Image (cartoon, rainbow, N blue to C red; front, top):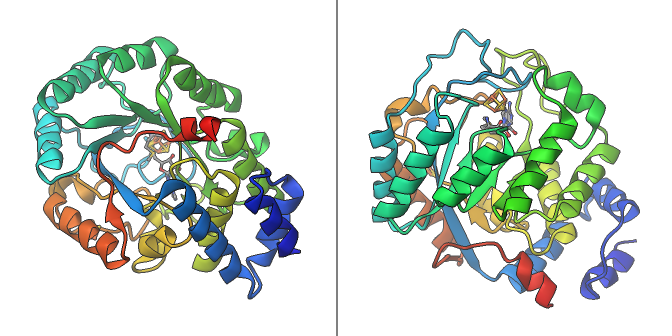
Length: 351
Ligand code: SAM
Ligand code: SF4
Ligand code: FES
C-alpha cells in the first residue's frame, strides 16, 4: 500500500485524497515511522538542512472576535489585556535582529487599534531601521489595508483557514464567514504577499476526511508557508470541555503527510507541539518541518497571550528563547537558515 505512494513521491506525482486517507490510517499502525522518514527525506531533498527562524512578537491580546477555541477571544473576561506601544514593538524588533535572526512575525488578536495607518507606520519604521523580513498575523482586513501594509514593506502574512469544512468553520466562528476567510487569503496572494495559512488538527466533529481536505486545500491555495498545529482546548472557551483527540505521534504524522503533499511550502514546527510533548518541536523538524518560530515577546506579556493551556516559554524571555532555539536546531545536526528564507514555491515552477 505504501509502496505505490512512495513511487508517486519519487516520481514527483501529486498524491490524491485516497492516498492521503491511506496515509492517515497508517498513522495508527507501526508504519507511521516510515511516513515520518519519507517526510524527513523529502524535506531534506527539497528544502535542505537549513532551519529558518521566525521570531514572533505577540504585540496585543485585544481581540474583537470570539473564535470558540481561542483563549484570548474578546469575551474571555479572565484575560488581562495588553497592547505594546509602537516604540516597544520597534525596539523588540531591533533586539530580534541583534540576536541574529532575519524574520520577525508580528502577531495579535484582531485589534483594530492597530489600524491601517498605525500598522503601516510600524512596518515602515522596522524596514527603515533593520534588514528584517516582516510577517504580520493580525486577522482579517480589507484588501486595501493588506495592500498598504505591503507597500510599507510587509513581506508575508499568516491567516489560517482553521478548517476546510465550511459547516464546522461557521459553527466555531461566530463572527466570521468561511468564504470571506478564503477570499482574504487569495487577496494576499494576489497582491504579492508571501502567504501562509493552515489549520488546526482535531477540532471537534472534524473527521479524517476533513483532515485530508484540509491538507488538499493547502495545496490548492499554493501557500508559501503552512502553519498547522493541534487544537488544544482552553477551559475558558466554549470548546474548553473537549479533550485532546489524538496522541503526539498522530498530530505530528499529519505534519509529515502535509510535507508529502506540499513539498515546496515552508512548514513550521508550531509552538503548540511543545505544549503536547517536551521537545515536540524538535521531533517535528525530523518529521517534515523546516521552520522554527521562537517567542520574542517581552516576558512580562507572555502569560496574557495564552491561546491554550500549558503554552511553552511563558516563563522565559526573548534572549532565553533565542539561545534555546539555536541549541535545539544545532543539536539535531541542522543549520540555522541564512538570509530571510523567503518562499521557494518558485523553485517548484522551475523544477
Ligand atoms: N488573530 C489572528 C488570527 O486569528 O489569525 C492571529 C492570532 S491567532 C491567536 C493565531 C492562531 O492561534 C489561530 O490561527 C489559531 O489556529 C491558533 N489557536 C487559537 N486557539 C487555539 C487553541 N485552543 N489550540 C490551538 N491553536 C489555537
Ligand atoms: Fe481573535 Fe485570532 Fe483568537 Fe480568533 S483566533 S479570537 S481572531 S485572536
Ligand atoms: Fe523558548 Fe526553548 S524555545 S525556552
